[in-house]
Image (cartoon, rainbow, N blue to C red; front, side, top):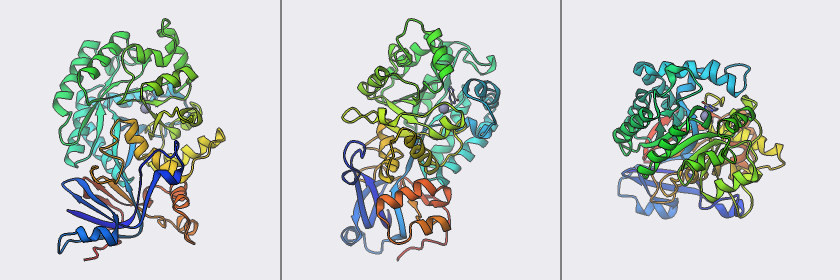
Length: 442
Ligand code: GUN
Ligand code: ZN
């Protein structure tokens, strides 16, 4: 059993659909109790403490916020080393930086080193679940799941499927081979510990029609797996997709034609979409990973949150760091850029909305709501402890008892890994920033 005391914050609804205040649950002096990896109680300390067994230890995270573990809806662990590669936009960046680096992941040893670093960095940043692109090589998936299973994390990942328009050494030698290798990885890893396999056709440019067709088949044949791909990130990319698939109406239609839309499918970027494409994504309940640090770093464009969150017709949106196109593994840094990209469209988002996008919003976009992304009893016990006074500036900014919305906004705009006081995975402490800071109450 684990019991933690602090200010509990989670979401019971979508603040983009209702008011922010209706969507949030805030228990100022709260107690969270976990048993066997799940949350059993969450509520006011005075009430919930009666449920504690005699002699139970309560860890008091005094003056800190306890929220659901953050969820990264799109990231490439195989691109850690090329994060912040200077000066190029998507097509050149892929060929000059990404594809050479990903070829190094044919080495299991290299992959294991990166996977360990990646999982450590996620936890230091308060991220407890990520939807991850690996490289083409099955061993790059093995390395990540070995590491995440060892730590008890709910990780979703898959081998990239790609059979054209990249260096031969990185490509699947045939669509059939890519299908079969993915199938073996599903059998090996899906459902092991908390692992979820994600069928991963890289994007329509790098996949032949046959490859996309087999990706759709594989996903359908294995309910519970996810599907992830890139979508409409860059204007040159969109033009190339039009050339490669002249019979399809648009980019979204390419994926829809091959059975790749639906609940549990997550598309990264979605920057350059028509109204009709948005409509298809909404109607099929497909998820979107908004990756603002990447879209700005690669000069791809400004995601249109007002289009995604149209009243009564909202798309399912989570936040992705998209490292190495993105420049930080911190979802707090990503919320900061989310706010600024929203401002470009005169669409400011308050602290409640920003944190929703990285918790319940993301779990819903991944089809994992009810499992992760909330502190409501019954959910898996992944949570993060945030310190609103972690830096001198944050402390100054959050002094004089601000509202919850304001504290969350300050953490989103000014916070980073320093604000992550502790991270718990399946009810167990997995990262603690300053081990002397929080002592058991006894
Ligand atoms: N489109 C296809 N592959 C990639 C990738 O690795 N990163 C980004 N940002 N976009 C892509
Ligand atoms: Zn990506």
